[in-house]
Amino acid sequence: MGWRSLMISRPARLRREHFSLAIEQDETVTIPFEDIAVIVLNHRQIILTHPLLSACAEYGIALFSTDDKELPNGLFLPFNSFCRSTKIIRLQIAASKPLLKRIHSNIVKQKIRNQASTLRLIGKSNSYLLNLINRVRSGDANHIESQAAGWYFAELFGRIFSRQEDNIINAALNYGYAIFRGAISRGLVAHGLNPQLGFFHNNEQNAFNLADDLIEVFRAIIDLYVYLRLFSRNGGFGKNEKLALVSLLNTDVLMPQGKMSALNAIDYMVESVVRFYSSKNVRLDLPTHIGLESHFMES
Image 1 (cartoon, rainbow, N blue to C red):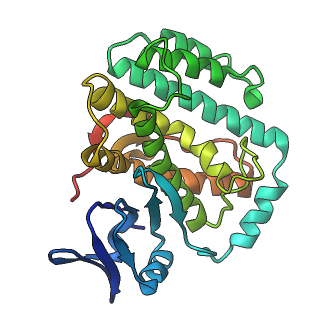
Image 2: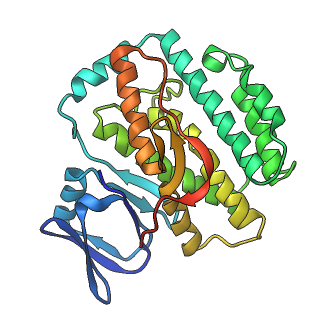
Image 3: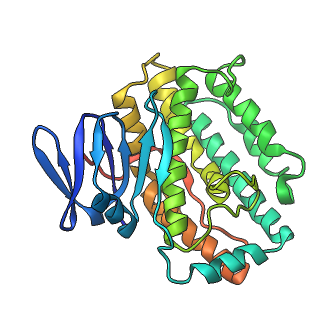
């Protein structure tokens, strides 16, 4: 699967040229489809051809549209890209609630660990969060995840901060979360999983319940970037910040298999989800947040 994350922020015509994406602007640039994981269309004057959309499906590329505020509002994903998707979806449907609750509690624990890492990386105490991890039970019946989030965001952005406010901080958080949510959905579809069938999230109107379960362990990466680049420095939220949020898919994380980019970690994590459904192994391969160092630089 691809590794490059592209953001198109100027008027352009995008088309297929054999095995490559051709971006026509002042000059024409071509990029092999097999290198591309994500494309974000961040301008109102971008024209696409049908063969390009077909190529995105063929190569497993997640294509994002954005709204008038340049925030992600749509996602184009491949359809039936895995040869055994029906078998895997049947396993998803048949999974027992006790197993799903156990796996959800593992995700909650890792989410809180990664939140604690963010606080440690900015020099703040994380002992309260670390203590909460031991209180997470099957299915998080005591709502420890919610308690941790309330304390965590207050430590990051101040006691009066609310995730419901319309401000730059929340806009940036939502932008970053949307990019990771789309990248995870791309991985789920590529491995034959149905993104609608979640471990914990089960909203009938949500096409990405499973992606919303799995994104929890990646959120701390976006949180740290927004704190360091926007909150602490009183920065704006423009093209450069949005591009940096997309590029967070290249941030190094620690997986059981070793250090790798978040994008690669998503694939390993999703593969472990498939193993969970196939063998009822309750251990998922989940990322450990270690900072914002990029696995590699890309244009």
